[in-house]
Length: 548
Ligand SMILES: [Zn+2]
Image 1 (spheres, rainbow, N blue to C red):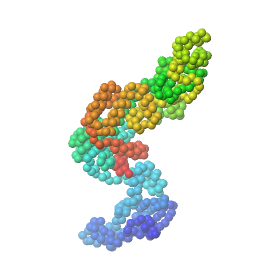
Image 2 (image 1 turned 180 degrees about the vertical axis):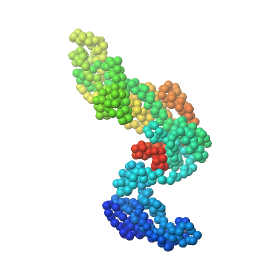
Image 3 (image 1 turned 120 degrees about the vertical axis):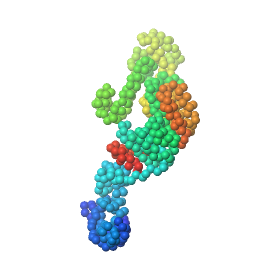
């Protein structure tokens, strides 16, 4: 095979020599174009004036840098009327005038740059045997021409943050071609309006609920139908649900705990499955309700603190600083973070009781059929028991609740012991059919534990149904149901819907959906992360408009 073919040189070049030194392959090439044309008058020239060398970098070959020494010629232009007397032959498009690299290397650097960004790109090119630097890579990306935005009938618009929650920009997506068509440097109504005004062909604007984009579209594209995007609608609802669940947290934890502790859950399905077998020695009285409530409150507080610790750690704070802020010792923080779990409530330990010596006797009598607390108390009192009647009743509660006091078996784990609104909200938001058995059980426990949670679940699922079946016409009915529920977090969601109702109904009826834009925002976030969050707007825009 000819070396020329191996190097994939275009027509009009011949290889004269190849040398290799220090991992650099130097390929000498001469231009053999027959009749180059004068760049000014376009007539063919044949008289050579002189030769000179251009050194250009080319694509690496088997991990080696490749340098082309291209011998090009200068020609006389013999057309008398032409003012250019001497010209250099063009070897474009293989090498552009004045370029120090071949067009194909230029393109490769652009592609690597688009995929990885400047800093990372420089590391990649270095490994590949391409000599460049991050500045050059960025320059190459910035040099990419931006195609003018064509007609856009259905526009999707959403915001994204440059710096987490501090500075925002706008992403615009053609909902029909699924392409990112532009990025705007802020998320102001004015900016969106100005952009839309240059596109009077827009028929539909799909946007998040209310706010600046609604205002921008109202003025910038008054001809268009505004559609509140379903993704955002549902997201807002889910946020309201999370707030509701957070408010009911204590209630849910307490009641759900009670459901699975056999001594308090008579006849429930859970009890049958989780009947607790307890040895006589470990027979505990039913908890004192006041003390139990206090214990659960303490646990809820500890859990909240733990979540606070996690949040502070996520902000990058050290153990000492976190300890200072939440009022714990640094050692505790260290332990929590190491165990990577919320501090679990201590199961009540069996405390020695004056009842213990009589436990065997009471159990025997119980099994004989004597279930009368007063009588049992009197019987053991005669034997010397000094405790109260009430205490005996408390010891009998587990027996009445069908607990087996015989031998020890495994202790059932409460499915919502570590309830957090943030996790639970997804059980509420998803289709029940998508939940696995354990999730369904947890969901059922939560709904049983709190009437508010149960009502909330019903409302969320009804809304989900509206979304999925495009039943915008049933929106009013749903809104009325929420209003009647008096769940205050959901009321504020309703107020938001009322303010933007036309677009919400359109969103619930028309097929357009911003989920698409959301996907683009996620891709943008990825690109942003790869640039270590340092990307300035113009570069971010280039990389998204030319995203691979
Ligand atoms: Zn000429």
